Length: 286
Image 1: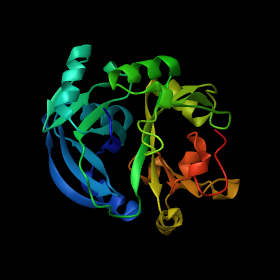
Image 2: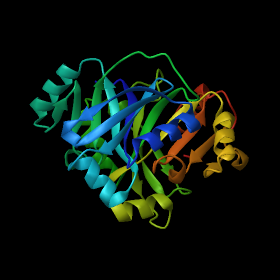
Image 3: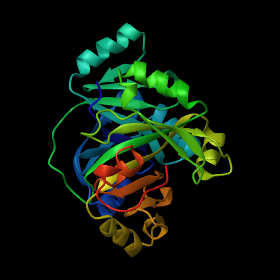
């Protein structure tokens, strides 16, 4: 029922500053502004590639103000698209899954998932803008990846036979990629069970518990994004010199509190079970 990882929502203390950051780093463009009463937030929607990034600033009491007060700016919710949101809502109701609706979107609180707040939007075709192609992954760090996989398989009517097992000693996790529609698309939830609490992901999970950790995007020219980051003295980790496909991690301090991975076109197929589709040498060792 899910089409794409089509957006993420960020809780931010200053939308204007966040808007400028996304414009400068990713070449994003503002497409609209409004409010979300359910979240107690004013929203600025930026488009980069074919994906949207919703910048949510507190507008009174609510989940966004609580997030900013507790954690500061950062990743707030994972966003997925569906061809028929009404049908998906009916499916949720049959499961007894609690959700809220506003402005044509469905909102799922983190207590109904494995700590991953989610928003479901109608699938929309967009002309790409800026320096990325699209979002394709959100990472849910958990204490039990199998329980999370079972939960999302049932919740979103996913086909578990399409999933791809992953493990990483370097980053300290094991889990699975819940690929929605391979090999047509990369879109998925990365479910990561912590195996090493001394690593960055493990420290994050120790602090916040089951939660949303980061996202990944694909870009036709990763070096162009790196150049923009260097120009502004913003932190990032360049993985290209570590026998990797052209890729990098943008540090949360550079992107409104959000950790973002950037990989070259098709490179992510190396760690997604289809290295034959990647078309470039290297790999991340998953």
